[in-house]
Length: 233
Image (cartoon, rainbow, N blue to C red):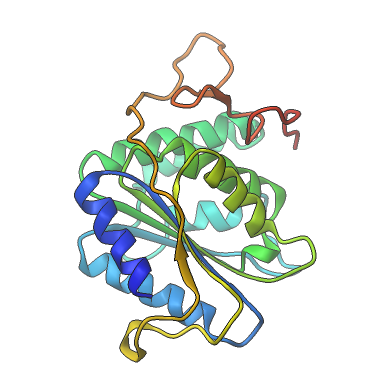
């Protein structure tokens, strides 16, 4: 937990993003830790949004991420900005690109935290967005906090791999011991990988029919990472 709070402080001070990963077996307190991170971020002046994937009850593709943009008493996106995503809903590449652009606009004014719980149940669109957006926004004070169970094919591993490929600061934990909120002391097993070089803050792709790209790394937003085949809905 201490490492997570350090990552929040670092994002606020330096303007660089981070990925916080809380993983483990069911019942060890992952959701409680995630809630604590959200509470601490809000107290520190972050704009915060929370979403949750549901097993067998996925309202719509991308719902965990989209809900996080409109959750709580002070949603990350105003109603009109959120409504502007609707025409892009059937165009997932452009939808994710637009969400990235809106988060960049938010991060100009204050740091941002987006928390997604139960990522092991996330749909393909949410998983795609979590692979692409943390790396794209690495040069902005946007922190992503995700909680997930361990599964044979763990979606959160895809997120970590994509973030690590781009040198994004990743705060994680291993499988030893229960998760514990800050009031009970730092969680054991937390590790921090190398911090990234500062990436240039670049605008999202403009109009004109060009394919969306993460111009900071040369990665197409369609692939999630270099060399992959394009994602299709």
